[in-house]
Length: 143
Image 1 (tube, rainbow, N blue to C red):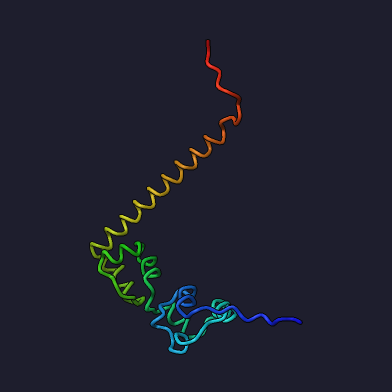
Image 2 (image 1 turned 120 degrees about the vertical axis):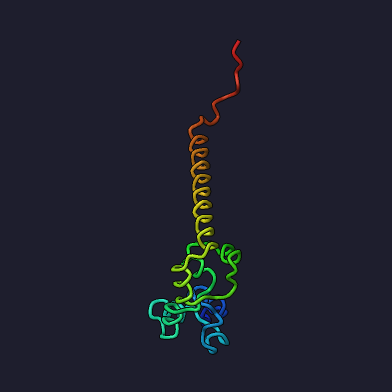
């Protein structure tokens, strides 16, 4: 007897995150239902009009807003941005460049430099430890 596989489904919040859209801006039927993996794949390759419009005009979720502004999500919070922003609002912030945005962008650049320095340092340590002979025998003090 062959059992029929049920399609893999996900909650609307998960689907919205994977699609890169703000859940509260999606249609009511999207928010109320479940999304199958097949539907998600179809929407990613062939987005319906509502999805294309949301991606183009927003409002956008915080992770998308942060990426478009070149800051971290916590940098958005420090700058007082607590709500989803539209593309027009993001473009206005980029054109205006308030002090908090300039500071947070510079902060993110410094954080990424430091993360890169640490990764390179760790890679050098790994490389150095790989060069040491293993099981070279017991320690023999010189006499």
